[in-house]
Length: 247
Image 1 (cartoon, rainbow, N blue to C red):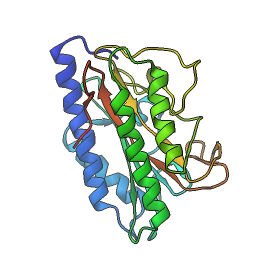
Image 2 (image 1 turned 90 degrees about the vertical axis):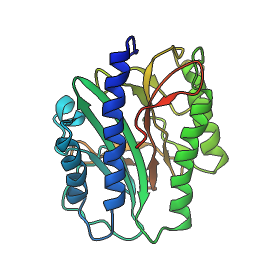
Image 3 (image 1 turned 120 degrees about the horizontal axis):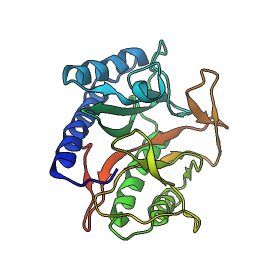
Image 4 (image 1 turned 120 degrees about the vertical axis):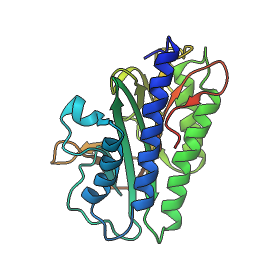
């Protein structure tokens, strides 16, 4: 989606704030002994109270309201009876719709006590997002966003999950362009004024690929190494991108 009016921007800011606030509520609530279904319910209650709907449910018939992925699970984890344990690395991914507009964001939370390795991985995903934001300007090749993410992840000794990438968002949950987290000269596209994209480093502790779990939704690392995810929906401008999903 490309923003073409004040109404577009205002609508995206509304749903973006709600997504950011829902993630904050879930982050505060996450604790050992809690099921992923109970954590999902925290986000659902908050968003429904403000009139928002689950974008994964609307788009794909996803069985949860939000996506909650634990440890080697990277994305699209289905909330259920799994009980969170001390040290678990939990990815909270919230995509919601309000008045026909969608915002998407994610954060990695480590349930205390956090290991040094888990904390470093979490920090790397966030840092890679910040590096991507530094280059995400009008006129920049989409490939350069991936280059920025990849360099930071490699610098910190971790690995990008190349099969998973960021994407356009706004009218639909997944739109063009695809925004890879690695550099390739074959990546098409240039960032344009008002373009709305989800920038989302998806990384693992060691180099691997991803596979689907038997539930048909959850994506995990093939070698079961721990994964991290950090994401915001942003609007491209001639200066620093506008982050829509900050709480």
